[in-house]
Length: 157
Image (tube, rainbow, N blue to C red; front, side, top):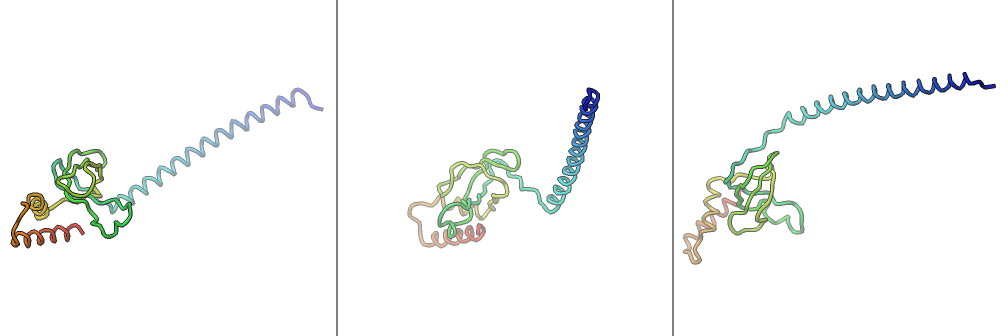
């Protein structure tokens, strides 16, 4: 036969087991949290060990941006869109760039530094030459034009 004292003892035992379970669960969580943080630090160190910092571009630098690999028939297209000028520097190596001249690609876009390349002096002269060509020009100019375009293509591929 059960008495009132037996029920009280049973309730006290249940209450104590619940409290000890909550304490143990908190301790286990703290231990797991410490282990996760330790592993994250190790992963971050091993990831950053061989990683080099992204190039810093300034406002006004002429760059080419990588074509997104979406769409049909892009295998034979150039890998980069031609000249873009840096407009605004954003956080985490991102840049607002604006198209310079008339060519394929978005007019204004946001791109990351790892998807951009700086144009060198020869490429800048070639692009300038392309956009300042008169409507009629002689054969000598055409040979020079082809040579400059070949240099530009070789540097982008």
